[in-house]
Length: 472
Ligand SMILES: Cc1cc2nc3c(=O)[nH]c(=O)nc-3n(C[C@H](O)[C@H](O)[C@H](O)COP(=O)(O)OP(=O)(O)OC[C@H]3O[C@@H](n4cnc5c(N)ncnc54)[C@H](O)[C@@H]3O)c2cc1C
Image (cartoon, rainbow, N blue to C red; front, side, top):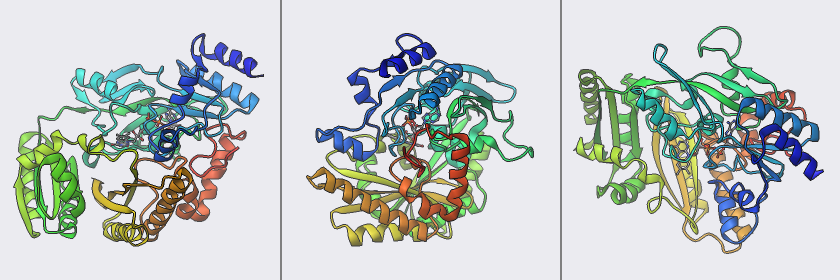
């Protein structure tokens, strides 16, 4: 049977594009989720796929999904494998559908200001291609070099300039999707209409459970004439939050605002930027034409001066921009053998500080082994994202105990956040890691999502066991 399926898959995608070597299986058994990384680092095995399949087109994806339906084999899409939620892990074996051969830039439309590409393209490669034509996608996440555009679409990912240019779901004009039963469909060619619900939004964030996104048309932007930054230090996080929220409430258009709580300011801002201060560090930027940027910048600075502050000036803001990716990589980012989790959530301005304190108190009061730090990125006119983290410097030596402790911190923190009006996640997705908490978040409305899943994927082949959906 195994050889028969291998030959059917080879017929679908071509000789050499169905891989079954142990090294490839191992490489596709660990993403950026801490548990499989830890498990692997302690010499234990994670589940592996039976076949790693590399289709070169939507038509080939459709053929693979039809074969999988026929034999009822699980299929897990895999982009860059940089997801932190275990979404791309083949927990029920079967097929890994690696999208990276589908990596073409198809067209840049300078009248509409859009780019159409295949979704297996590396996000940095897409950005370079668009920049070569004099534009930018303005999707600049910290994982730009190691993730695919499909991965961001599947997770509703967010780049550093989201406050002005939006999350990836705001950037989409239209998409091509291969449904679980192997039909190639397109969403409508424009993102605003009154022709029924927006199908694109159904597949955005579906994490490979409702199909494979194979093409996308994204908005692009002229490269701005200038981009300027300014930093302030506030006595505490509350003052900084009031200033940041006021910038948004007064409808200024910063491209970025980032606010670090007192512990992150004391440790991370000091280590990465060399700014050794007590308080809460806030940085913001504006981009566009010089005259408008200067006006908005002056207005934002005036808003900050309404709170007790120290003006750190432009240089202390620019240094943040230049070092913005460093925060997410060693030696500044936590790594094994430490345990860490990014408890990212989003809430309204009315709730966001309560969410922060609820999570922090849960970690500090219940887990003496853990530390809690956080910053606020991705600001909207109604609220912002909390990028909180817990860190355990010395997790239990027994891997099972380490998993139990890790999961307990997640469960208690997320439940505390939901109680205060936070949601499960802002831009990393649900995956395997948080699936069990979907019921806490959605309550009875989870039935709408499970109903859609059952209708589109009656054999439950697409990424089973993820996003709170049934396993096999
Ligand atoms: C150092 C670091 C920094 C990070 N910074 C950011 C950041 O700034 N912003 C951010 O949003 N994320 C960030 N992440 C998380 C991660 O990069 C994103 O979640 C990214 O979207 C994952 O893309 P990927 O191609 O690696 O997807 P994978 O990890 O391969 O897959 C993720 C999920 O998407 C599904 N999937 C992948 N491709 C498709 C497709 N074409 N169709 C349907 N489903 C698909 C998979 O099945 C899986 O469920 C960071 C990660 C790291 C390691």
